[in-house]
Image (cartoon, rainbow, N blue to C red; front, side, top):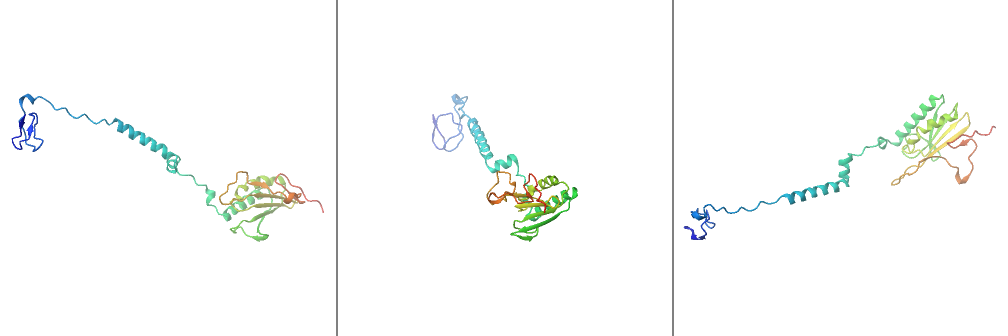
Length: 216
């Protein structure tokens, strides 16, 4: 051992610099070839594994959130019918009925009523639609009405009646209008049922068939 010539700190003889003052030292010959062992390197494998596990867990958790669904499936597609107003839907029904009845050579007259009073297609509240026509073949009305029935709820038309002056029959179609916070699990379209179990009036019929009124 020897002391640092500057700060007199005891040294072992293998130090190249004094650990106290930093003065360069003369290494003794018997320590010149001795290498001080280096500190072992840090093992990064456990940190890498932990990072991969955390990232994987985060991805799995994100898939169950709306952000994960958006990344996986993209933005939900909008239904064009969601932006259609009731008056616009009524115009679509009118157009479909007019085209269908005209194609079979039948005249068309459409009227709207609400609370027993005549109104227009521009009303923002529910309205009933009445179609007056003259059909050569009463069965031709089924395909014509079926094409427009899907728009009845959007048009706020709970009842659609078609009167045929030739067969003197009336067909009534009804739809259950949706209420806020409820969804219809069944087919909303159904022929009108007689109130209180009463028999259908003469000249009226359900969707399945038409019964002509008794001759005067």
